[in-house]
Length: 535
Image (cartoon, rainbow, N blue to C red):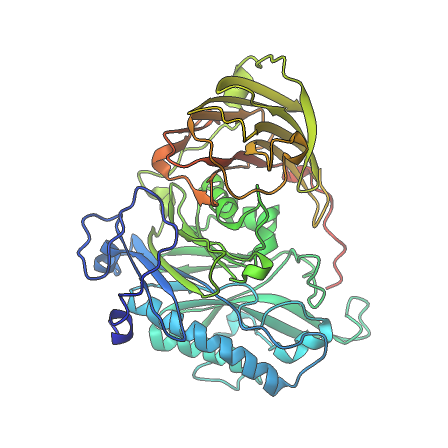
């Protein structure tokens, strides 16, 4: 272990971690496998390392591996509205790569086999087609069998690929990063952009020898990504390692069937590498709760690396297994990057505790809806009109329906506070703002104030504790993502909730107040056709 790490153990800061796990320092021996190590390095590279202590002893085992994700506070360019020279662009990218290099080295020292860094982590965002161009490189198809570190000029100017390749090779670790790809095209081709080139938001993977083994062009671009082209067709990028089969996609992709669901269902990958620049949107689209719920619903390992920029509400990275949240980080108070490490099963599908298939509507369709004198009312949650019903007592059973979806809730509060209001909500419809996708959602949530008009408005804290909760719905999809978010955007630990095979999300004895409990269903077959793709 390097001296810089050990010499700064006096400066400690922990990310949020599942509540049942004890925290141990580097200098203390682990008492059991679920313990962790965490320390803050106070230098030009402040990071927070969390790992399962026992992992280091088993790093060479085929059935498990240590994964790393880095939440990066990206250094942004001074301007993105006017072009800069290639040299100035490279200078900015190297500043970010200097930080990523330290994260990669430290992850490797801790035994990590692979590290994931965020979308836009090398140069930032908010470019035009013209101003992003100096930052782009021509990224070849991985089938060319190329190690940029040993052949830096084989495919033209490629300083970023070369540096990433050398970092992977020198540290014997798989490195996953996001950068821009450029491809010249025939201007006479009707699909070719007017400037004669395609520009793609691209994820790259270099193996432990520094070889380029994966290249993925983001298929579902966010509305503001005008600097990039949509690929004409989705690509399903996978690669095999001694520690499992991996798939990769980027940010907005997680909301859609292609390529995210296809990689899991049809290509049977073991782990997903998820690079993102995710802006948190409470109550249902905050990074950590949503990404961990996707891992749980899809029954897959997810290595999620987010950007860290509090002014843009960007934070929230984690390592998630099908059966449990391994480690996560969410911090809107500081501006430094964070490194997370945890042990994962290489092939979770064959493990003894792999979650069983859930029939998400079985229980809800078997029970008689609760009849209440309490009237339902409409409310807006992230531009969608939900049907809500207020929880007026400390104990109760409620049903609320919208179209074909009926949501059932049984609950018991520790006490019914007069200064907080909770509602049960249902939404069955097409979301049309910042993308188009069909949702079926059952949710218990706290309203912003006691005014029912504020139900669905983002709120980050609560005081009401629940002794028991049970939520279910008559979903018309097998793709449902369960989440339980506590006050302060913390996750409930697995010992306090479970997903039953009949579709009930149940919780008991949660020590903190509940902010949101939700079952978020995606009805992919009802999505509108994809946007017209121009290459």
